[in-house]
Picture 1 (cartoon, rainbow, N blue to C red):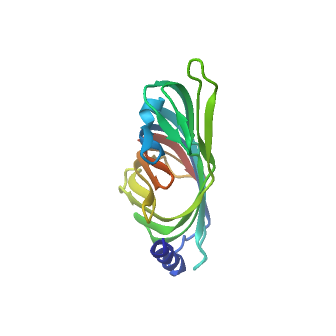
Picture 2 (picture 1 turned 180 degrees about the vertical axis):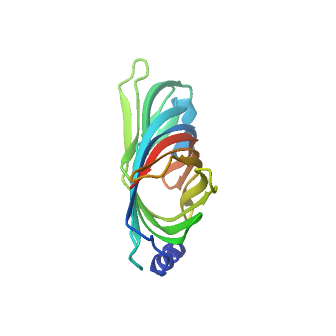
Picture 3 (picture 1 turned 60 degrees about the vertical axis):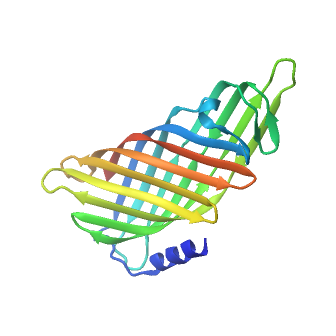
Length: 249
């Protein structure tokens, strides 16, 4: 953890290049995500697919501000609504934060919604652009399960996810000259002790003819991996394609 924070601090302190003019970048899209992995207490968790989590359509949007002032970082905010509510018959016993669930119908709600607050510098800003910085990811979600077996009372448990984690941020984009197309990659990551979080994406985008308001579309693939090994275990992967509309003015 200390190594990650130290590396992030050195990145943010460096006098990197900045934008030539003031610019605002914004976008909104939908991520068709597929879930896999385990949730629950250590030694008695459950496969998320057995809870009915498989696919969900999740919306996100972002806005970024870039300026020509040296040493002052650019800023970016992104909101991702990442949640899935399901109902399934579970044929095994599992435990969530000390509460045991026996086989039966289970209602579940897994919410990994988060906001990313990113400060970054531009290392390059031409047909190849490269950004590096630091992201603070604020989770505002929960993991909830409820079950009412035959002849039994309602059993439910809710685990709140309200952590804020620092992550190293990076983005690279390569413009394909005279085509309007570009390809790029973007990622946030942190690894400390036995816990880790990574969020990576790759994309291809097309920008229409430049004007006062530049409009474009983006298609890509995003994968988020969350691994927590505490009293409650989470080893969850969320991945899938996304599509977005973006603009620059």
